[in-house]
Length: 126
Image (tube, rainbow, N blue to C red; front, side):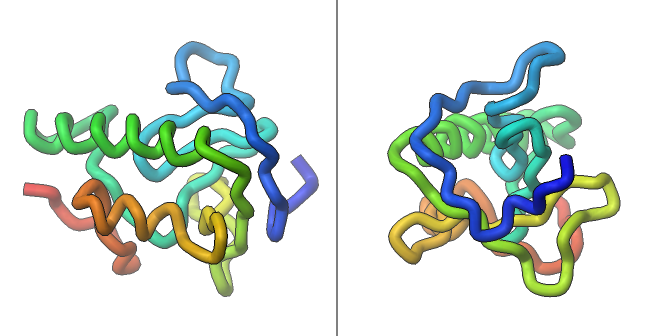
């Protein structure tokens, strides 16, 4: 996909949990989603893993973060803002901050205890 999705306003869409191969507009986990066929990593947060969790507690928190992100992105339109200095991560995901009414959706997840602010590296959830 050639577009960078920077500053793009995402109109109200119906996001669901990603399942199967059709990943156009869906949520993978609490900090990764697909928008218009582009894989987006929410750059300002880190959430627990759901695909390879280290323990049942991490899985449960990761599932709650995923469900909450689905709720947040389905509530109303939001904007995608570039992560300063980095367009993509090493996995080819676009690094973006999701903003609605001047507030980061990632910050909402952090305030609810479902994510932590991204520190620049992965840390264990235990």
